[in-house]
Image (cartoon, rainbow, N blue to C red; front, side, top):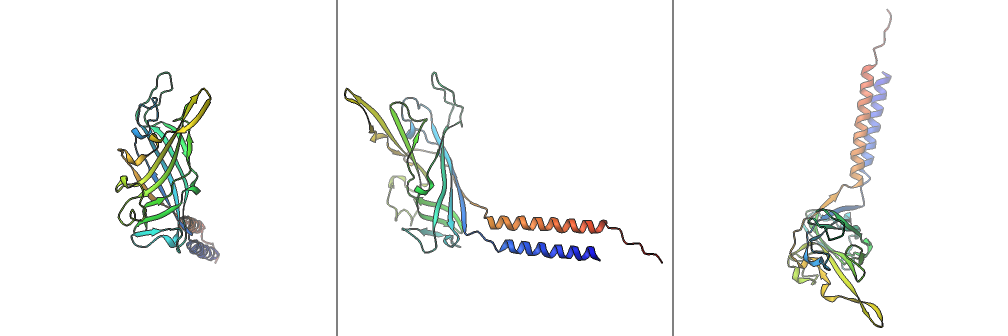
Length: 267
């Protein structure tokens, strides 16, 4: 009898734990965007770059739950929104060799090798609009990030810098943000590059911007893979974990109860 009571109590505690887990929802939804555009020409910054320099990366976006619609639509933040806030939590880009690259007298880089990783200041990327299909994030507009210096694409006479942004040129959205119209219906990340060149005269050396090579990666031909997926919310993970632990606890109690031999009573 005692074993039955103990099992019943454990079952009740497990159920209560699972219910409590369900009442701790996350306050914001997280979405992870992964991208791999294969660009070549825009980043051939000097004679060393006679190969296709690709770039790939990932960014994490966080949106207040009240700003996630239940049906398809666009949510604007100009400059704020009554529903709450949305922010870029992290963003990085990896420069990589699209094809095998072996410069004379230098190291060789097989295709796919990461040459440099650029981690941008996420707080510098302000979200202007989010486009949802149902409650899933499909595209977004951000300001450009801070410019980061690139070691691999620089040398003694050239300094190059990169900045990241996300655009979503679809109807109803592109009309609000009238920038980079040459991109047409492009939706995805942009990697913006700037280059400075060192000029030397008999009076000394100084750095000047190379305006002709300031470019936006989306302007050239490319192959783009870009996907945004929802990150499981902590509340949901807690609920699943609590339910699994509760089920294991109850199963173990019942198994132990079956293994207890019946009491032997004398007559």
